[in-house]
Each structure stands twice: as structure tokens, then as C-alpha cells.
Image (tube, rainbow, N blue to C red):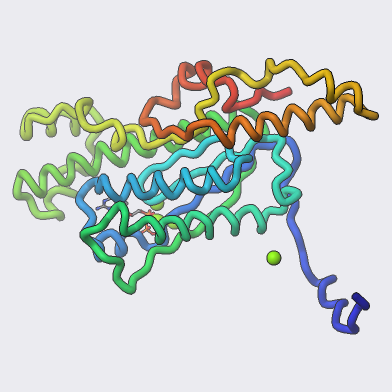
Length: 282
Ligand code: DGT
Ligand code: MG
Ligand code: MG
Ligand code: MG
Ligand code: MG
């Protein structure tokens, strides 16, 4: 097609390309969910159906974008972590960010009535914002995950204690806030136990640890032997092998089960047992 005289306007477009060989994190967060959760009568401090819906929307995003290795969700937010080697959309930032945010939002809306059948969505519809952060090393990537999980713990311990004081202790919200001002974790644990007989460690793990979602491939793909047939036909064997391996890996992952767990991701155990999730600093 011939260029029109208007074509030059394309030269005004700007693209940001994300640095190669870095972990891409896209974090989506519910917009104004304080109001949204009140309007839709979410249970306090945690609404199980709303969290299950977040997890289902995140799993759907991962199915559509297999370059995402894992995701971690708490409250109204989800972090999606891409493989460092991902070439998705030529690593164009806006394309990656907008696709994740809109796909997540679409599934959240689509799945709402399945997970929250008793509460129709009101005109205050849910929407999500998003940001992209790059992490250059596996250590900074792990620290990011730890940061989110520590946040989950701090917020949930506070909220659990706060709502116990209000709902079960009959305190008004201002008094409860005052009582908790300056308290340490041990103090909150003590209030829960002595006043309400709640052992915080027995609270459901989904609330205390958040949700991590990943593909449960059963063996480390890094050790896969390349297909000799691919070797024979290749002009540039190194490139061809890695392409074949990548394609196989993609197929395996598209068949692998997506699992949701509520477990500690700060200690080494989780990552050591699942070496395919992070790929080292080579
Ligand atoms: P933002 O993100 O700046 O647009 O504003 P918000 O209001 O979304 O603030 P944010 O993201 O810092 O906090 C999340 C809000 O969502 C917080 O007010 C509590 C609410 N929320 C999230 N999950 C639950 C839940 O399971 N139950 C209840 N009752 N509220 C929840
Ligand atoms: Mg926000
Ligand atoms: Mg929010
Ligand atoms: Mg939030
Ligand atoms: Mg298009």
C-alpha cells in the first residue's frame, strides 16, 4: 500500500524497550478498592471469594502469556514475573503492560459472577492500574517477592487484630486504631490470643502468606537433551537447538498444570525445590 501524506505522524510514536536479560515484573493493583470492596460488601478483613477471583484471573493471564513464570498476589494486587529471556512483544514496555492489565481486568469481570454469585457488580466497576519494574539479578528478584510477602504478613496481622477488636470486642474503629498504634507483632499476637482465643498461626494460609501461582512442570527443563534431528538440519546449530528447546519447553508448559499455593517464598526451600522458576544469573 502506498504511503499516504499522513504517514509521517507515525514518527511521533515513542517506544520504551525493556532492558534485555532482566526479570520483568508487572504489578497490577485494584483502583480504589477501598471503595469497591465496601460497595460490594467484601468480608473483613479478608473476603475469600474475592481472593479466589483474583487468583483465577491471574491464572487466566498466565495461560494466555506463557512467558510469565510465576505470579504472586495479595489483597487487590498481583505481580507477574516474566522469564528473563522473554522476547514477548520485542520487550516493548507499553505493549506488555497494557496487555497484562487489560487481560487481568477482562477476566476479573468475566469471572466475577462465578466466584461472587450472590453479589451482582454495581456500576462502580472494578479497574486496575499497573507498573513495570525490572530486576537485574535473581537476588533482587527474590527480594522483591520477599518484600511483597512481608507486606502481606504485616497487613494481615494488623487487619486481623483490628477487626477482631471491632467485630468481636465491640470497639469502635477509632479506639481500635488507637489501641494498635505503636504495637509490635508480638503485642498483636498477644491481643488475639488472650482476648479472642485466636492463635494467629492457625489463621488460613491464603491470608497469612498470599498466593503464588506457577506451572508445575515436574522436572528441570534446563537438563533437557536436544533433539538430534534438529541438530542435523540446522545451519547454525546453537541457535536452532535453543529455539527447538524453547519451543518444547513452551509446549510442555502449555500442558503443565497451573497451581496455586499459599506458602513461604522468603526462605530458600520454595525456590530450591522449583529450580525452573528462576534461572540464575548466567
Ligand atoms: P489505589 O490502589 O490507590 O487506587 O487505592 P485502593 O483503595 O485500592 O488502596 P490499596 O490498593 O492500597 O488497598 C487495597 C484496598 O482494598 C484496601 O482498602 C482493602 C481493600 N481490600 C482488598 N482485599 C480485601 C478483602 O479481602 N476484604 C476487604 N474487606 N477489603 C479488601
Ligand atoms: Mg494502587
Ligand atoms: Mg488498590
Ligand atoms: Mg493494593
Ligand atoms: Mg493492533
